[in-house]
Amino acid sequence: MGDVTLDGITKRYDDVVAVDDVNIHIEDGEFVTLVGPSGCGKSTTLEIVAGLTNPSGGTVTIADRDVTRLPPKDRDISMVFQNIALFPHMNVRKNISFGLRLRDFDSEETERRVQRAAEILQLEGMLDRMPDELSGGQQQRVGIGRAIVREPEVFLMDEPLANLDAKLRVHMRTELQRLHDELETTILYVTHDQAEAMTMSDRIAVLNHGELQQFAPPLVCYNEPANEFVAGFIGSPSMNFLEGEMGGERVETPHFSVGVDPAAVDVGADGPVTVGIRPEDIYLRQTAATVEQPTDAVEATVDVLEPMGDEIFVYLLLGDAADDGGPTVEGADEASARSDQLLMSVEPDVRLESGERVEVVLDRDRVHLFDTGGDARAHGVAEGSEAPTEVNADGGEGR
Ligand code: ADP
Image (cartoon, rainbow, N blue to C red; front, side, top):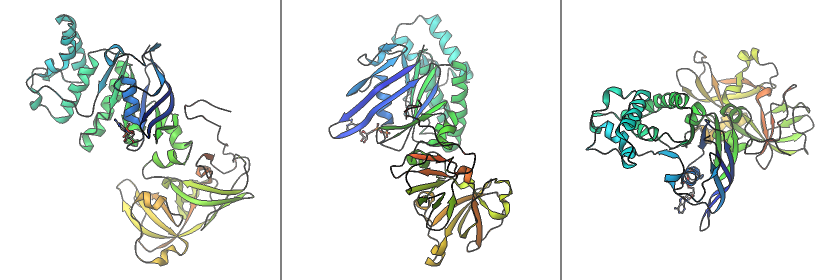
């Protein structure tokens, strides 16, 4: 059984805490992705599971065996790295079987495994080719083939698609999912790309500064982010955040207010909160008929339009911000950090012009509230929205 447990895993480098008391249990056959910004401790965590780095504290269990002190070769894992180094003077067959030949597998068994890997990876016609006769995607598949023939309990993959061009990366995401379906082997995958994490994984573990922020299925992280960090990191473009003040049954932001159903919000003292709303949950007032519990209309000025083909990103300025001069938008992250801007997405056929005054509404069922420490207090503030359950970062329900 290829389940993997990280229990209290910590890694310190002098004064840097690269991984800070991470607890994760990965089920046998699950596809789990470690995701977070550069430097958050993803690779270090993977290296600790692989046995390439010793933890400063905590234990790693693979298939019910404590492997914390075992060398990589005794852990029943295979790794796929970002930089696949194929041997240029060996053909595909020899490249794939290299590790088996080192381990003195008999030639019949080696050939059986190579054929199976080639079939799964659609490399059957290419076994006699040399690496320089392959495209980047094909070379990457050979690298994965090398890992497959080991038939491990667990695959560890560190940004294996990072060096591929954008189109091929998207294609390889599908291939990896298919591979996972066929092999039914546990995969622990590392990427900084939240879209990659969202599309492939059964569950994602979001890390920041070495700490686990949330460990849950992708859509749970998207719809019920445990905190402001996860809310901002998962989803592109990012969620809008506005400073707010909770009082009575309303949250006041500098430019508009949102009615709050007391049953929907984990009631705490009135005071400062952060309001979060995703671009797709803001509507032009005239198209908001489908929104059951909208906010009052919010006046805004269209600043910048970004037509994406299938949708248009509309950067809105709230209140008097529009009088400050020309376009102020520098990108989604800049916009999301300011309380006088909102980023909205609209259907591609909507006609808007820069400078136009519009009225928008927010879907109150999709408004998130975060307390001053960043923890989620509500996902939906309308009647019928449920207050968030207290969830530990490792996915268990707590308190
Ligand atoms: P990620 O993979 O998320 O980009 P890493 O796991 O590589 O992050 O690194 C996490 C933190 O640990 C970073 O601050 C990094 O600088 C630090 N770090 C990683 N390896 C070492 C090392 N060998 N020596 C000192 N600091 C390190």
